[in-house]
Image (cartoon, rainbow, N blue to C red; front, side):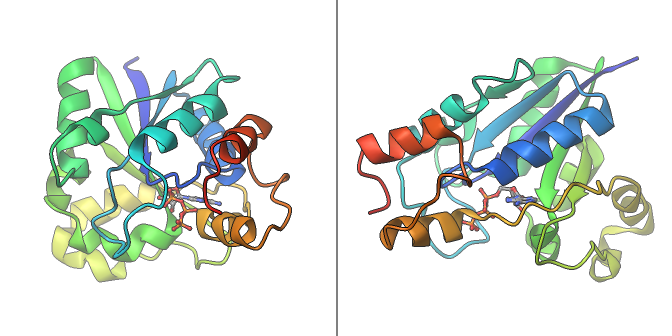
Length: 203
Ligand code: ATP
């Protein structure tokens, strides 16, 4: 059987327990050997820049994944010149792992609408299994707006929906609570919270 590698891109500003919970669930469901968290320089689909630096977001990810042997972090998108597209990242990992591996890319249900806007979306869908995960507060994935990508690709997407547990946490909410000096201790790993406090992030 091919090695199964999960790639999980995002801004992770900051990484939270929603991210690590759904990633662990996805690894179990898919039978993956590895989950690589890939912080983006910035999302081409969000019109705001990340609040924390790329280096801080990558460091928080390293702290958050330290307890899980399957989890790792790649700074490849932070190191590439702007803009950093998923299509390039998937191609890079396909070259690195070779044809003996099967790549998966995770996105939350909130990102389905953006898929049509992805740079070389067809390439991404053909190079890997793009898995849409359930997300609290968002409807179950519906691919009817993506027919222009081709019936086979939509069929492939539909087959890879992951019924991940609903974890009602977002980075936006964590940043808001930190600004308001509210408790965020149940929302992210203690090591990440410690890093945020020591470095005065998001205040
Ligand atoms: P923000 O609130 O700043 O938009 P976020 O919490 O959505 O951030 P991202 O770093 O943008 O975090 O998320 C990376 C990926 O993880 C996205 O595909 C997003 O849909 C998914 N994701 C984030 N949080 C959850 C969650 N609680 N459940 C399922 N998927 C999630």
